[in-house]
Length: 160
Image 1: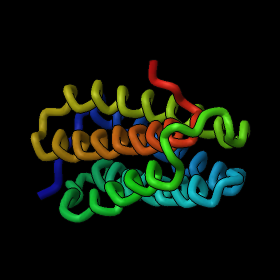
Image 2: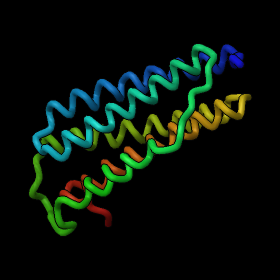
Image 3: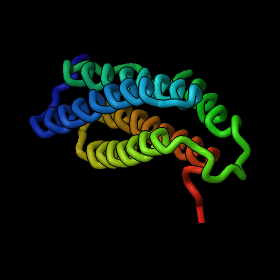
């Protein structure tokens, strides 16, 4: 059964659509710019996940609730483990400065996008839509965690 969206809900989804389009584009562009093959792979993986999010948002805008969940997080967990397993955690300062800039930008982007989903999820009447948005937000947080882990393991982010 198709869902009926209010004007506000449609507007919020249009904002999220723009955010997802930006993430898809930035991750793809940054994957091409990254020097480290591991970072390229991470960004390409996240670009594909952002495309899935965009597809889900487009489905919602067309009145359909997408099926999310299941095995989607398995690849994410593997990517996060790979992000931190390649380099010992005691590495400091021996990294590509341009890769670090890309990571910082994407970490900032993920923080913003996750926050936007946090706001949006509270504005929807339909529980199923809220669950979809919550699922996407969780994956955005996982992307941020994966980038953080990559940065920390490569000496780009020091937790004090």
